[in-house]
Image (tube, rainbow, N blue to C red):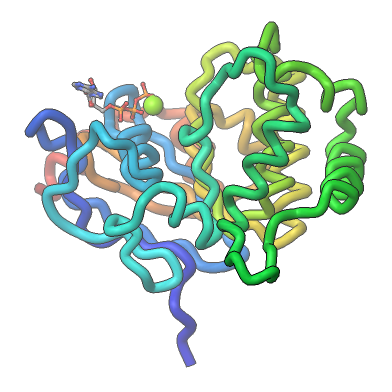
Length: 261
Ligand SMILES: Nc1ncnc2c1ncn2[C@@H]1O[C@H](COP(=O)(O)OP(=O)(O)OP(=O)(O)O)[C@@H](O)[C@H]1O
Ligand SMILES: [Mg+2]
């Protein structure tokens, strides 16, 4: 018996300002899987992440993105999050005067949905929220003082990543896309990301991890690695593919991709 895949991209053609960037992307991620998406600069990796998140600047020309069998391209960003997808870009990077804890409470309530007006409130109770926040911060080795800091105000790159992982832990999504574009990810942030992701993975989160770094994949073990080039996935394989890319670069795949088209 085959189960509906958790996340599926089907023949996705999409781009920006009328220009096609993704030229027929197909990708299936099942429950309990971590997939890495690699590829040269400008190949369309972030474009894919933005489209899945529902960024308004991007256009879809053809194809579907299914989450638990439902075409999310027809849904607003909030509905996508309510279905169990984690969409980082949705959330502003800095909000002056809003503490980490308050921001997280708003985010948790937003994902849980509106009050139904009949007393069956889904909103998280303050005490339950505080308990959960303490538990998740402990799990991720985040200092308690972090909760009272203002969101992203003066956060270092590593602290921003930590905040993102904490947010993911609080929202308990079933699926997340992380775009690891930050070139300045130092060893500390690298450990934060990988430890956090591994713990959330143990808690049943599946994910698509966009990365340039083989070194990140030394800490997070994806079962599948895909290479996006010029808007198409030109090669998929296991973790050994990331090692091959590290050693050989992308040029050899350009020839493969060219020969195939
Ligand atoms: N707002 C925009 N207007 C015009 N072109 C854009 C815009 N955003 C992205 N592009 C183009 O789309 C292509 C794909 O960009 P994208 O950011 O998806 O690449 P990427 O694979 O994430 O690259 P990187 O590894 O550098 O993060 C690039 O050629 C880029 O210049
Ligand atoms: Mg990118």
